[in-house]
Amino acid sequence: MQHLGEIISLIVAASWTVTALFADKASHRLGSMTANVLRLTMAVVFLALLLWVTIGHPYPVFADGQAWMWLALSALVGYVFGDWCLFNCYLSIGARFGQLLMTLAPPMAAIAGWILLGESLSWKSLIAMVVTLTGIGISILSRGEGHTVKLTLPLKGILLGVGAGVGQGVGLVLSKIGMTHYAAALPADVPAAMGTMLPFASTMIRAVVGSLGFLALMAFQKDLGRLKTAVHDPIGMRYALIMTFFGPVLGVSLSLMAVEYTNAGIASTLMALTPVLILLPYAFIYKQKIRPREILGVTVSMIGVALFFLL
Image 1: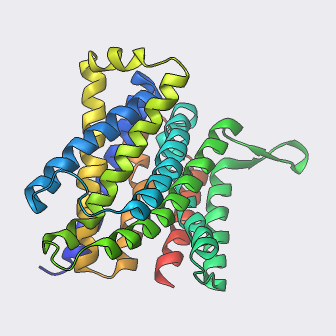
Image 2: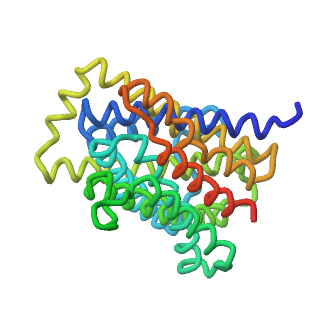
């Protein structure tokens, strides 16, 4: 089928839009850490079943200590820190602006790759960073009295969104390091399906560590009782199940499939359209007006993201 990869990429963007909308709802109803524990725990169950069916083991078989260390570190940075920031960002400024600030992830990944992996940081990447930041600035800044510049959103929400973008970007690079160690640890007689399922096995390690990290935070805050309340909340559990299915399960699966059928840069750009796709449904659900400045800001940010992958 012609343009199959591009079509799948757009489905991924739509899937992650659904995830963001229901993560917003779950955060408000259950609390950010409770929603994350439930999401990651459900993801572990889904991934265990998937690995069991495909490679015959319901756990990340063959992963050595180095793989576990780097993937665990990526979970602490990307999930525990990054997603804690993201879900609390939703509580402060909503999923619409939260997803806009998540366009910071590619620049942060580029910087982390430069520091940790020695990857080149070209002038084209620097231009892409400037364009992305300009788009974000258009959306969250406005002119105040006396030609001063003021924020249109709470500073707390913006800082949480920035933290989410940093966490996801750096966590992605740490995951790449972990997966490299994981691939190197595979024996010669590994099942053929293991190569395809390696990202899913790596995601399972990250989900296990991430859920334990959030549980530890909840225990430290003596807030574990919220989990018991949450599992008896059918509406909240439905939100958690939907965001888990459309995020770590369907979204990740289809994203891996997309890059098999089209150029990785094109796929990555199309999959990053969530800040655009979320505008109308979010405005409809929450009865909010979309200002022209916000549309312009999102458009400019998306151009910046596209420049990262397509230049």
